[in-house]
Length: 444
Ligand SMILES: O=C(O)C1=C[C@@H](OP(=O)(O)O)[C@@H](O)[C@H](O)C1
Ligand SMILES: C=C(OP(=O)(O)O)C(=O)O
Image (cartoon, rainbow, N blue to C red):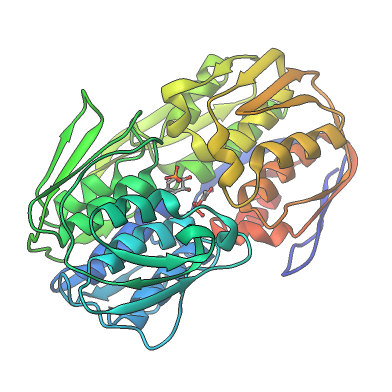
């Protein structure tokens, strides 16, 4: 029997688990977080009305909606059925009368900086929560400064709170040192309001939702898959669109791993976005020998979608590195849990980026899984995990990181004894109904 105590704000999750259960059922997962942010932002910048179906109702898109409402976009009440954004047209954002708050959301802050920097003569201030105020913004501030923007902040303009005075910018050809969709998107969004052609080249391809959606809204976007570069031509007319947001594969990842590691399980996960720049989790789990099938593959509003079926299987270790990392960057905490139940030693490397997410995810996962009895070593840029196939309950903390809260919750289902996860409510950043869904699939 698993006893999963309810999680409310500021409460702990308690799981009592002798793992004599399996996971069974059909799951609908919430909308894709990356696509939700972009639909709200482009809807605000476009002319006319944008409709969004399937928006993620997590805290992060709520932060984006609040920021753009403060700058004059009309956004209807947020719900999953239908959200309407009445855009105000490219370059027309109003100067907000107060500080813009990106909350916990790196995507909101970084993408928005590109938009704000290119709005001449407006003044903006941007902040976020404790976690976001410690995350590096220089990765977007530097290229935007190269384009001529004026941005000030703590620690040599690299940490929020930030102040921005919008200006007419110059186009650049930027070679990003990191594969980051947030960096790429911030520059492309700045390039929308910059005469000429602005190009971003990245060392490996990161998620391409911005390129797809910008094109759908009417921007001129060229991509070169040979060089991983994307170019935007300034001052297009953006026209409101009908966006349908698929389910978030980063949220589905928790069920894919849970179904794979809990004996006797079978889960069916409907309506999952399977954009190739996001399917690294499927590649990694396939390398580990997971039993996952893609059904009903289709295209919905410019994004590939499928239903996923996962059944328990005996996993084996694998190596996850290189160009695969940006394709599964947010799934590494839950992949570490999978590796605990895989035969052999799994190596995850080239993933130093995890140290500057909502928490230092390498350090936090290594410490939490060590406390649960796993054989895990923190590497400078990754993790080394020798699968032992068993965990014990422990007192854990999410460190207010949503991916950590959910990864440890799945680990706790497989742990013998009682696990508590403090600040488990962090899950609501990207998956407000996560614990209800977990409760619904536990069968004893
Ligand atoms: O562009 C996006 O929507 C995102 C990009 C990724 O961040 P980086 O660009 O920092 O890798 C990812 O971790 C984040 O959850 C969402
Ligand atoms: C890193 C994440 O998001 P963001 O950078 O938008 O805070 C995430 O969702 O795991």
